Image (cartoon, rainbow, N blue to C red):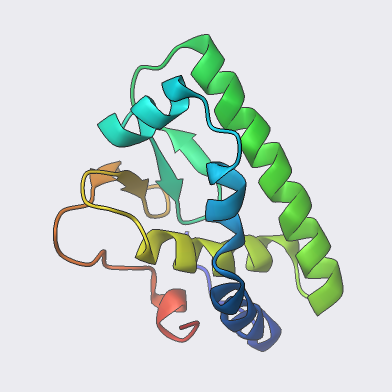
Length: 134
């Protein structure tokens, strides 16, 4: 799915960049050892929609932790969208631009409905809507 962010959503991206990336802060808080290992191994990764996803085989505990983080992220995106007058999807996408740009080598990510990929040493080719967000 191609996504074009609205002008207010682009302003959100700048605000999120200044705030340090809401998505990553939600993911980083209270991570279990199992989730940390899944992120490091590429079994769990970040998606261009602003949410985490399961890219490989994980335990039910890790799967539930990913779901819990995504629920918290949705609340953050909903709050941010309400404050900025944009859609929840635009707030999530703007955050995803920042989150994806901060991934470390070896971490998994997915753009749109594409296949899961592993970040190498080079920068990720971000979705086109991110170019005007940063």
